Length: 560
Image (cartoon, rainbow, N blue to C red; front, top):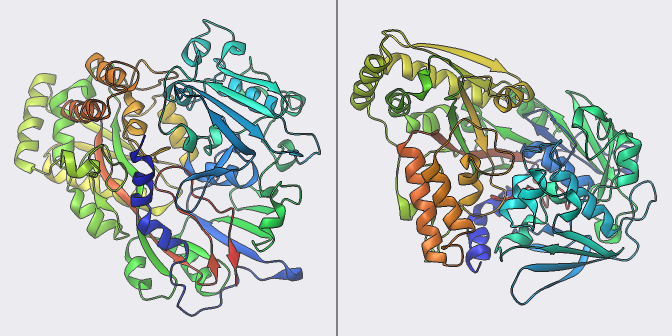
């Protein structure tokens, strides 16, 4: 896809500045010291580690840590372009449907076992295993891997998935049609390799559910092949990664820091104080802290690709309350998104104008998607009250209750949920709104089980195309586990992705635009805001690579 590189480069221009934000400023934070001559960078994270199983993970924090200690065929560089990692080169067939990756000599896992092409075959097969039911199995279908859906549905064995290893150094992927963003996705953790012998020694099995094995449950229950190894796991506290001397490119990593520590800091104020004291090098700021620290030499701000929304679970109540279109419309119309972004978050976040975020995807004409489509959501109290009254009449009730599920690992979701609660109570007289705070891990589990009413959630794009968002609600897709079902929506995406418009860039783009308009007209979800990031980064720290699409990289950090 010719616009792929342009999309990522444009979308990351501001983000790249953040990687060395405040480099002209003062300060000498040392992130907890340089004991024994080791250079350490400490990063405050506002959501705890969820899982180190790269076929189970669904959150950005887990993906960041996995990307440090495991590796893919490629990695994304500072401009978010794919560069050789475990594969030293690759060939693409003339029709763009067969990728042949050539692995480097001497690759090995952290236990000394050779890393071979069979590890990629096994890893991809596990991703597609029906009994695992990975939420990211759909990516195999997204990139059109041969037999991906049939294997997941159990119609053919996993051995017929379109991946093979003709020899230990050659990994072949067969697609059913060309995919412009294929290569960039090879840096995504879901596509990382897995050593079968080690995995099975942990009780793992392609035919078993994830809960039946010990793989990735501790630092000694994983194998590593990335630039760092996971060396210390203090649950709910800190996670330490140490340089991997057996990484294929260890010589090029000699100037990078010896240790990276991710410290769970739920309270942003305490984390900022630790930054000032030199105990933390990287902190994300929220709310009033942004104003407090914006003159600090290490302050930087950027717009991210994360789009926050409310999922209104239409399957959660037997009385079909949330299946009522007018109720969902009333809930959306009564949210003042500008106030949430500008007065509550204050971190560079912006009001959502649709499902697809800004500065993220660019069409065949080179224009930002949002500039082409415009604003598809609005704040209109009078219209909200009109829809709310219609909803009560249609439901035959004067009393409607709504529970908002949100995560408590960081401060921002709670503040947003509280403000939405207040807006709904003020703008929709008589509505009862309850807050349901949970840890992020609990929130993810409840939403996966469809055990909630309204859930505040977000999505970080895996690649720079609207499809990475729109596919979330495509109900005929592999491993779909949602509440929204619309045949017309599915048909539009099928036409754009694998059907008659797939090879026509303009027609495909028009289909995606129509799909977004359809799901928002249907109130299939309620967009709220696009995430900004206000951060303090120690001016001595360089090399953090922020990617609006894909996983942020901490692989190449230097200090001092």
